[in-house]
Structure formats: structure tokens, C-alpha cells
Image (cartoon, rainbow, N blue to C red; front, side, top):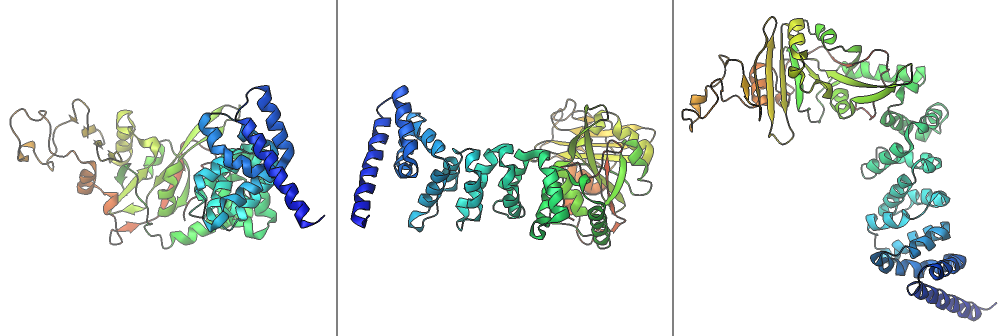
Length: 429
């Protein structure tokens, strides 16, 4: 068949498809279903017209074009990706992701293939579409793993893993054991993100422990933000704090591990009877300027439930500091052995101050705007939790290379025997 004959047939097909799309916009109900079926039968030839009509149909709230593209399936994915980069102009990733998100698991191979596309926006859109497939996208796991550690696409890769859930752990462990070698590092990252590292082989666990020991020899402050709440106890005798807080299974941890681990310090594990148990992880710093700092969400509001008093009884004294991320709310408290909480402040609490002012506190009369009746009777000007920490113990944000530091940090958990790797999220070392 000559080229001229092909051109005539292609033109006729285009006219036929255009007519069907136009008809689709004019009919409803069963008639629309018939037009969709005929467009699906036209296959790849119908895709350009459907893509052109899609915005109008979406604005009108009619789903027929999306239905036709979905049912055409793999050819539509390939054509949509090709059309998105016509003219050498990168597509808008969010718009392309919405388009690729129309397709179901029948298009898994095509979507996975787009992860190798030369255009970053296409790769990102395909990754988002794969995440939308949930557990059905598991066969694409090996193609997604290299995106872990990629600054641009790592968030989407993590969401993909979250959609697969723990069911992906066995496959990831197999990659760690059998390769391919280029994916082993990424598989470890993925296992850490899923909180499934307790399944690692004895050899892998030994290697990780050896790495931590090496890093502890020359531990340094990482370029990470400290958390907004902590408890400080004297460095001497701090080990009594583990029992006072009900913490178990201590393991050495670097500062980098502690600061990155605070993001995901809660996990749910199964009890022997099958019920769920929520466990928390606490990070204990090296001794810093004579103090050990305890970080963990489980410590929030510990002055209100008796734990700060128990810490003071065990360690001699305990200081609690909290501030929110907006510097709007502050809470600090000081407990001493035999005396309980001797002094505290909390924004918006009534009364805001408890206990008598301590000798180091700046009196309220030093406020330039002070006048009788302006403050509560036992108030002072010491409302900033960080400033109080800096005066009495350690302000984490003031720690630098010149701050005295001794020993090493620890992780501990709130229930025994739950394992070390159940907490989601990869740790820096």
C-alpha cells in the first residue's frame, strides 16, 4: 500500500475519531457509553483527540474522556507521555501526574518504564501515578528504589513505599541478600523507612553496629535542628533516669542518629496476643557541658504526670523545657529531689507561674513597663524556656564545637524486646 493511500486512511480515521469525540460531548447515558466503546475500539488512534478534549470534559464534570483513555490503557499512557514533551518544552508535572493517575494497574509496565524518561517532570509524574496504584504497584518496586536518596523525587518514592506498606519488606530483604548489587543500598534505605530493619541478616546488623561504633569515636554535631522539647539531668548518675522513665534496651547512637530519629519516634508493634502496642523511642545525648538531654515526643508534658519528679528523685534534679515551633508557647519546670517541682512557667496557663521565684530570676519590676498589678504575685520575667535552659543547663541551639562533650549518646525504648528497627525512617549516622 502506497504512502498516499496510508495518508488517506489516517485522515479518515482522524475525522472518524473527531466525530466520535464531538458526538461524546452531545450525548448522555447509554448513547455516551456507545461512543466511549467506539473510541476505545479505535485504540491509540483515538488518544490525541481524547487528550485535546480532556480539559473541556473535566471542566464540565463529565468523565467519559477519562473513561475512554483508561480503557485504552497502555497505548494511551505512551501517547500521553510523548505528547507532554512535544516541542521540547517540559510538561507541568502536576498536570501530567493527574493525567497518568487516570490509569489502572494494567498500565503498570508503561508507568514503570517512564521512570527512566529523560525529562524529570515525566519521571516525577510517573512516580506519583504509581503511588496512586497502592499495593497493585508492587511489581514496580525495583524501578522505584533508585529514587530513594534523590532529593527531587525522594518524597514521592517514600509515599510509594508507604502505599505498599510492610508487605514490601520480604522483597527488599531479598534484594539485600541476593542483589542486584546496585539496589542493595536503596533496599536498606527502604527497609529503614518502613521500620522493617529487624528483619536484616545477622551480617547486615553487625555491619551497621560496627559503623555506629566507628562514628562514635569522633562524633560531631550534625547540620540538623534540635527538637522543641527536652529534659535535662546531671551527667553524673544520669543512668538512673532510664529506670525512672521506664526505658529499656539501650543502644549506642550518634548525635546524627538522635536528631534524625526524633522525626519518627513512635511505632506500633504486635503483642504476643495479637493486640497492638504503641512504643516510643527516646534519644539521650552525650554528656554536654555536664548535662544529659533526653529527647522524645513521649516526654511532652512530663511535668504534669509525675515523671519529672521521679527523674529528680533518681538524678538529684531534672529540668524540662518546651517551646512550640512558632515561639508562641513556652513551658519550663525545675524539679529537685525531695521537693518535687519547685518552679515552673507555662504560657496561657492560669496561673502561668507556680512556686516561688528563684534567686536567679529577673524580677518583674525590671520590666520598663511594669506597674502594680501587671503580673501575678509570684511572676518574674523568665518566660523564655530556651533562655532558662541556657542559664541553668544547656540550650541545644547554643551548642557548638567548643561546648564540652563526653561519652556517647543512646537510644532507648518504652517497652522491652520490641526490637531496634521497628521505627520508620532512615537515620543519618
